Image (cartoon, rainbow, N blue to C red):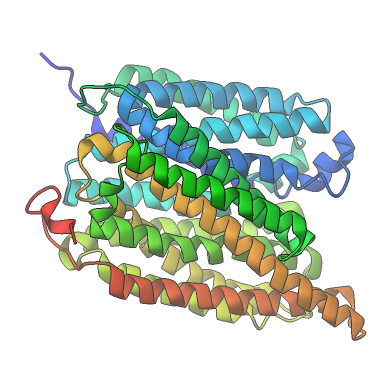
Amino acid sequence: MPKKIHKGQVLFLMALAQFMVVLDISIVNVALPSIQKALNFSPSDLQWVVTAYTLAFGGFLLFGGRAADLFGRKRIFLGGVTAFTIASLLAGLSQSDTMLIALRAVQGLSAAFMSPAALSIIVNTFKEGKERNKALGVWGGVAAGGAAAGLLFGGILTEYLGWEWNFFVNVPIGIAVAIMVSRVVPESKANLKHVHLDLPGAVLVTTGLMSLVYGLVKAPSYGWTSNKSLLFFGISAVLLISFVFNELRSKQPLVPFSIFKIRNLRGANMVQFPITASMFAMFFFLTLYVQIVLGFSPVKTGFAFLPVTFVIGAGSAIVSNLVHKIGYKPPMVIGPLFLAAGLLVFSNLQVSGDYWTDVFPGLMLMAIGLGSMFVSITIAATSGVPHDKSGLASGILNTSQQIGGALGLAILSGVYSSQFTKSLMSGGSPAEAQVAGSHEAFLVGSCFALAASVIAFFAIKHVKGEPASSEAVHMG
């Protein structure tokens, strides 16, 4: 007799694991000054504490997602959690800048296996339709709220316990998740006659994506048309084009391109790109404004973003219940408009600004938009996907998020730096230059959000109610 699956426990464990993954993208931001002082980081190398994680995470997601389908989602997830936990412990014990950067890369690599495997487990545990929508509502709320929560936890841990605890906090959580998952979650994998992992394809897409992310991250400092930037973009283009040719010729490709025939999966990933491009940059520039211009401490900065987590969570719960009645297209069209409105509010921040009148209204608009969008995007990107490709679909969605975030931060950092320099040269104070730079960055970010709404309107097929069949509804 098969063992009964406790779906609520499965969802809680997968959401908790995803919370760790998202948290570690933002939690160290507040701790960077303390890390720089403790490990003698040079100013130019400090960004690698963040970049090493992002590079490895974004580069290996497709590989991790397909490995979960082929070798067992539970097995890959447990391997990722174990490696992530060990890397977190060692990162907190780091004695040098090089050691910490290397361990951040291991954390990112582990997360690239954890995250798509976790989402794939949810997709395969919950029946497509209302049941899965509610589960993905929880998942979407955790994914969107984790970045804001990371700023709060990072501030508290850094100020009262030390920067090391930004990493140590993962250890007990990781151990508990691994133990519970081994007991509660059943194993599942694609029902295929082979377990052949397309290694040439994996190497090409991983190195291609890592080269692209690195180029995007460094372009604002190198210059977009500098030889170094063009070199990394050129290497990425060659590797990714080679990956496409390899996939077309491979008998068991890493990414069967037939998956992109599923219209809403294709559309959801197109929407994800500009959404995360604007969101990642929003958190980055707003954190700088709150700390440097308004003079907030790390802990006060964390609390300033706390309402975002609650609003996103509430919005995710509401939308996950509504999607069954109205479909996921309306929230994907309307949600980005709230995000754009919030960014427009931020484009009017003042040097003598006040949190409650200048920052809080924009945060609420942004949170409402994100709460509705991430649930809808996740449902659209996973609905109608065959079970043997659910891990791959999860990996593609996460890749769109990471590449979109890196691209947005790189573009908006360039916009910010240009305006910042122009303001200083015209006699503005550092605070005035910072505000001037952020004004332009937020305006461009609002354009990204508006673009997401337009893409959703044209690219997403309106579907509501229980799906009639697996794939037929979403092909096109």
